[in-house]
Image 1 (tube, helix red, strand yellow):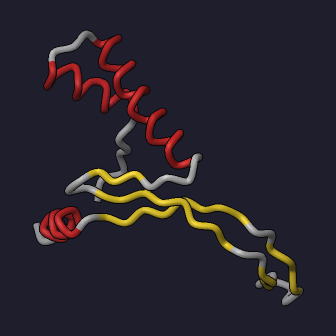
Image 2: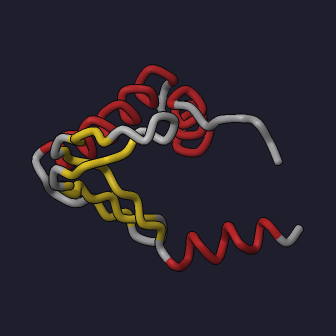
Image 3: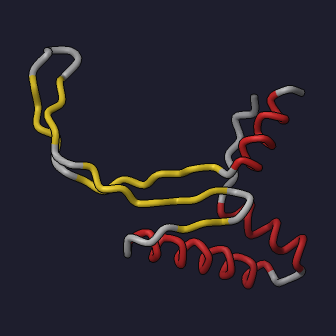
Length: 100
């Protein structure tokens, strides 16, 4: 399995290659899309990208956790967490890639 990571710069370069915008415009476009997605998630909206995934923010209630080393019970504060749910098409595509 590859140890590489897809970065914003990689996405900008792909937009540059595929769409033909300048490198600066490509980077601005990628940043704008990420900002719109982030702003929507912060506002509690879900973000759905067809044939890819849905991102949601879920509220978790307070609970009591346990330190695995000491066994001591520790309160865990309520928080909001980001969830990622891949589409069936994405799941199938990733599974097909595993069979190579």
